[in-house]
Image 1 (cartoon, chains in turn purple, orange):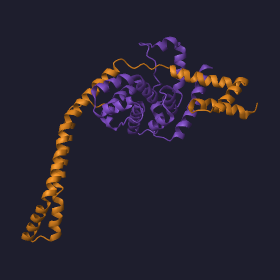
Image 2: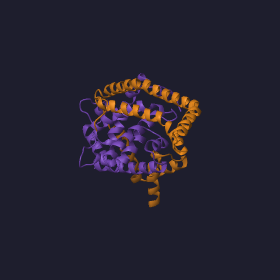
Image 3: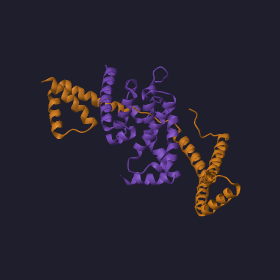
Image 4: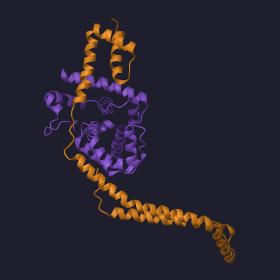
Length: 187
Length: 162
């Protein structure tokens, strides 16, 4: 693994405050995006974002630098969401996006348009968001990890704590679901 | 063209993005996509779907990172304050064990003497000797419980209400 991962591991073991500040800054977009995707709710994602970094501080000694830091970070975030979900006696990740109590995926923030927002038309954005919210959370999650975070399948298996074959089958199904909903939305 | 070929092409389109495909498979796929408009459209839709997903922007709320940094620093301070206490507890445990090992023959004789003097059955004073060693652990447990009760009484802005 890279020297960077090793130095992060050393810093986390020492609970280096500067390193933690830097990591929060560096991974804020990726972690927040992942949390929004798996929780389907921006406010909830904010809570989990903070809680994840507290957990990183407390459990930093467990990171050995042999895997990518982001994979370990996502695994922590995921466990927090699952724990919270269990405490609510929910059955699966999908219950986080229960249409009864919620809350479609909330991506856009009109106050701070990114360059991408400016490039893409508002209509297209809305279409993508609406379409993504139709995909079950377990598929949405693997799509994010693979195609946005660009994790390897082995790393994803670590994050999700499932066998490689499960990751692959979820990816195939997720890909098909994504293609189908976006095609449907465009039609 | 057979249905099998179209199915294989769609499978390879997905596989190319999920795993890897061999050069021979890629060559076959490219040739097929060149000849079959439906499968080519399927490939383009898949690519377009992924592109749309990648470009769906999720801005981070303003101040979230700095709020998180602040909370992490507070928690770090709290953990550092607790560390010396924990170290002292471990040191006390180690000293207790060491002293226990060194003094055990004398304690045994003390219990034996006490048993003989009071006429207590051998099994009882032997059991007493065994229980004697749980005293440091009980003491440590009481200290930990008191610490927990004290922490529970403090207002804790660190914990999140869920």
